[in-house]
Figure 1 (spheres, rainbow, N blue to C red):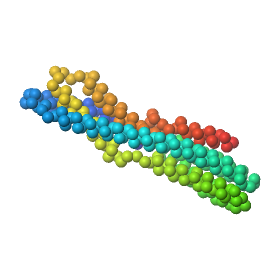
Figure 2 (figure 1 turned 60 degrees about the vertical axis):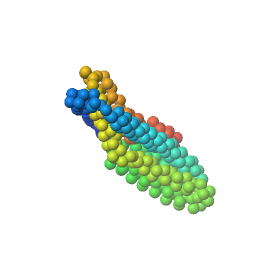
Figure 3 (figure 1 turned 180 degrees about the vertical axis):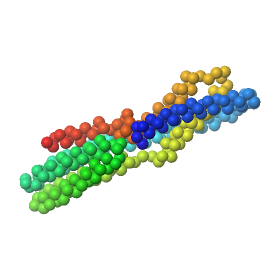
Figure 4 (figure 1 turned 135 degrees about the vertical axis):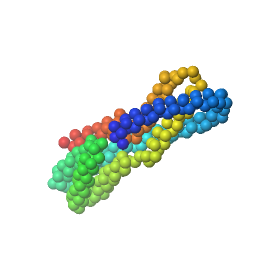
Length: 255
């Protein structure tokens, strides 16, 4: 989901909540006019259950999005550490083999940075990822060949390279891990249902309170938008780009 998609979802949700409150208000007034105060009997338990479910859904969705955000941020740190460790262990190789491998490492870090700079352009990010994977294979092949005459490199460098390669798969999987779309649909549905019930509950007032109508819709809409922003930290206001500076600093140290 891109920034535009999240903003559009929030805008539609906000408008839908205003409409749902108006529909609930009118339905409530019609029923009050027909049945009097008895029309409210027994509705409190239903309202409480629906609003409670909404709160529970928001809590779980927010917690899950925040947890996945922290995991993605930690993986960037882990990748920077793994690349840095493997780069340092190139010193264990014979001197003639080191310069070509160091150049491959520089190109590799540039490609890895490019993968995430290209987002939300998925096709461009995939092209950068393919280049990074090709460089991984070149680095591994060249390192295995150079380590044949350096037993210490075989024991120390190759495991570090393996960790460096493995973390890219973990990061790609973490980037693509999100709740099913039905979870976000459920959030939207519950927000509309709560708006309908809120409007119905205001039916007894002589006039609608625009402050409460707009505040209720705005607060729930912003909450859902923040959850989406947390869930897709390469697109919106909440971002993990600042942690990419670790890879940038590592690349500069390789000069």
